[in-house]
Structure formats: structure tokens, C-alpha cells
Length: 243
Image (spheres, rainbow, N blue to C red):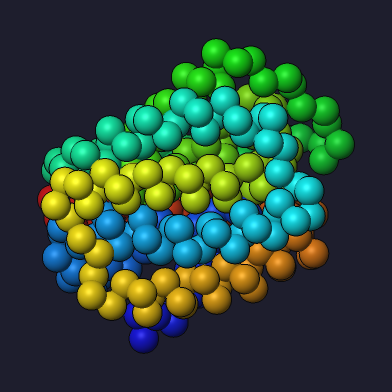
């Protein structure tokens, strides 16, 4: 049952280039997973989901690697550092949940034409954002895409479709590095993590195809808003569940 649920989450999130780390954590909270297994398991599932999405986006030449490069270069070291740290996340989850709900509201109600041109991405701005999001990614196990996506769209650095294509490889790289840090810190994934990963991969395969073929720019923005809002609610529940 959990494998099917992880697959369903992955399908929904993959339509907008996300892996589903926040929802994976929420499902594990419902299932009463040991706290030391939750972060590495979520990161492993992120890797499974984001690997296929990255491959498909790259095969279709949707990934702007020049735009992604400074974000990744800055994020990977901080994701590793974040992975080394084990801390009580209740306050963090509550604050982040509120931020994600606000981001969802901005995306849902902010008027923007699909053809509106993007602004150029300043190097130091990309480095600062990449470093911050990478650290949070490794620290919490959410992959970082749910933070990166609204920032890119709000700053006009990428369209919703471009954001989806940038998010998948960003999540993949940072989740891999964050998992290394978590393992070094003594945290290990669930014994059934590989089975859950199969479900996450299957969901990503369907969801990414749906997002590429049938979602317009506006639809992608609204689905992303729904995903962020859901993630925000899940994190607030997650904080309350362990508060």
C-alpha cells in the first residue's frame, strides 16, 4: 500500500518537475516511520523519481544547463553540509509550511502571460539562491525543488515549463549529495526503501510524460501552486505531529 501511495505522490509531483520529498515525509509520518529513517528514505525516493524526469527533460532538450550550472555548483557543497546535520525540525517545518502556502497563493493568483519573457539570471543571485536551497535540501530531505521553483518563477528567471525542467536535475543532484551526508551522519533508509523507490520511479515516468504533453504554461503554474500548497499543509501537519 505504501508503495502505491509513494507512486501516486510521485506521479502528481512529476507533472511539474518535482520529486515529492515533502509528501514522502508526510506519508512516512502517518506510517510512524522511525525518525532516523525518514530523511534518507525521502532522499532516496527523490533520486528515483528525479532520475527519470531528468533523463526525459534532457532528452527533449528542455533543460537550460547554462542557467542550471551556477545553481548546482553553489548548492551541492551546502547540500552535503546540510546532510551532515541532524536536528529537531518541528519549528523549521512549521515556518517552511507557511512559506510554501504563501508561494502557492502567489503562483495561483499572480497574473502573468505565458509568453512573457524571462529576466536574465544574475550570477551572484543564482549562487546565493543555489547555496541556500541546497543547504535546506540536505538538511530536511525534501530535495529543494519546492523552494527553487517559486523563486525562479517569482523572479522571472524561468517560465513554469522551464522551471519544471530545471527542478528535476536540481533535485536529483542535491538529493544524492544530501543522502551521502545523511549516511555519514549515521542515518539509513528504511529496509523497504528500494521497493518504495520502484513505486516512485513508476509514478515519475507517468507524471513527467503528462506534464510535457498535456500541461500548458498556465496549467503548469496552477498545478505547481497546488503542489506547493499541499506540501505546505503536509509540512505543517508534520511539525504538529511531532511537536
